[in-house]
Each structure stands twice: as C-alpha cells, then as structure tokens.
Image (cartoon, rainbow, N blue to C red; front, side, top):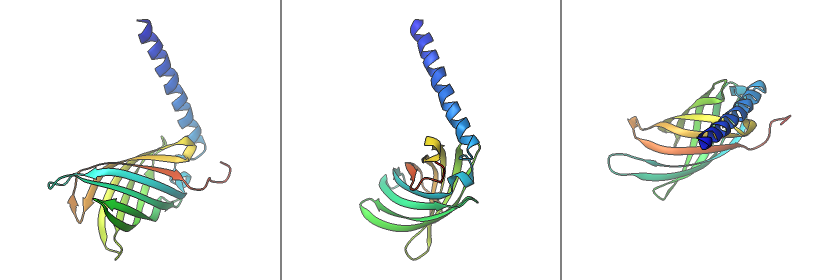
Amino acid sequence: MTRKIVRSIVFSATLLVGLAAVARAQDNGICSTAGMAGEWGYTSTGTLIPPTGTIPFALVGRLTFDAAGNFSGAQNGSTEGQATQETIKGTTTVNSDCTGILNVNVYNQLGNLQSTSVLAFVIVDNGQEVHVVFKSQTFYGTNVPIVATLNAKRQFPKSGQ
C-alpha cells in the first residue's frame, strides 16, 4: 500500500512539473505557428509496410517554417539502402497545448510529387525540440502503412531564448 501511495505522489509531482512547463511554453507563444518559425534539423527512421514486405528507411533533413504555418526544405535518405534526395513543402497546425499536425508533400529531384504524409507532433524543451510520429503515408496515391518517428531540433535559437 505504501508503494502505491509513493508512486501516486511521484506521478502527481511529475505531472504537475510537466503541466507547468507546458503552461510556460504557452505563455511564451511557443505553442503557435509563429513559435515554430525558424530553421529545424531532423532525423527520422522507420519502416514502410506494403503488401510485398517491410521496407526500412532513414532520413536526415532541414526545414524552414514561417509564422503562417508553411514550411519547406530538403532531405537525404536511405530506403532499402538506396540513397534519395528530396524536396519538402507543407503546412502545420499548432495547438495551444504544444501538439500539432504536419501535412507534408515530398518531391523527387525532377520536382514530381511522390508522397504525402500526415504527422502528429509535440513541441518540447521550451520550443527547442519536436517529437513526431507518422500517422499516414501515401506514395503516388496509394496509402502504405508506416511505423516511423522523427525528431527535430531548432538549429538556431530564436532571439530572447
């Protein structure tokens, strides 16, 4: 019984500290499209799951967000050991609780749209980092199940941070 009480107290304290951090982030305007504006570097790893079997991939890239929620950038990747270079454009929605959605369009080197993705994220570390999970992935109009994460860090601190 004592262990349950201690765990409950530790859990409650941890939750309160986390909520206080989110409240501070909200007060600083971090949890907004304007708060995400700037340059971000990221890595992503995961697995695509088409009917033919699993396909592992890894990505590294850079995105620039504007205050209106638009972003663009470029990434290099490896899919089943094959190198790729792609251009990215999209939009983001940021909620006041520091969660949000990215709608991503990926273009090949010829400028042709090859895939679209919807990703869910949470802003952490006082607006310096974002943790992301892929919700959906579509290649040339065909939905392909995916299990993947992405972690991004702000490349240059915003003034006053």
